[in-house]
Length: 115
Length: 112
Image (cartoon, rainbow over all chains, first blue to last red; front, side, top):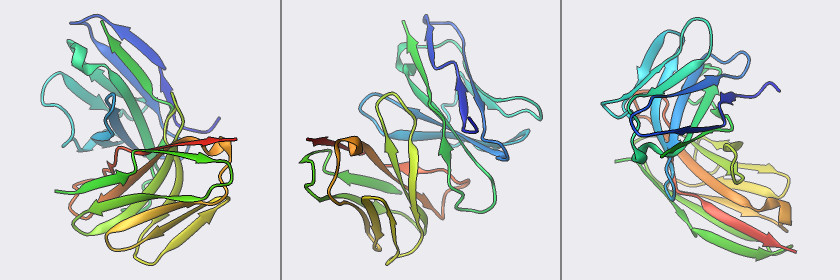
């Protein structure tokens, strides 16, 4: 399967714990995006990264959330000290980075539940 | 502020009953309009990209069109397997990166 891979698919955390979500882009893609889908809400952009660089984090909450895309390995979205309001589906997308209107291809998502 | 509104929120069709989904958008300098399909518990699946008014694209029973203010996704003779949530998204020129702005989607149910 050469698509975008995300793991884990489901993650349960208690309030105050840390959540780490991983995303491996499609082969040949160098751009990664993270989106969040809250119940009854549309997908909301969080952050856009290239290898070792955060390009646009305008959708990221100011506290507790961080993202990275290291030179080697998957992109990581980290949520520290999770609260119930963080429960949502988190989707990663990747694009080849060949132009300003690259098509973004989405992974299956990680469904985070905070108890 | 860039915005996307989809209508209707939900649509029920009989197999073979053609219809259209609407996506109205407000954006400063449209760079692209995207249609995705999302099945329950899965990620969005790419369908079409439209770049300029008057453009049309087709794939099987689906046809997407674009004007300066809205896009339509026409579904011809739908089948039960077309049941899904259809998402519209835009990319505006004033986005710092290439973030997509999504509508809330139209949930289509096709019964046999």
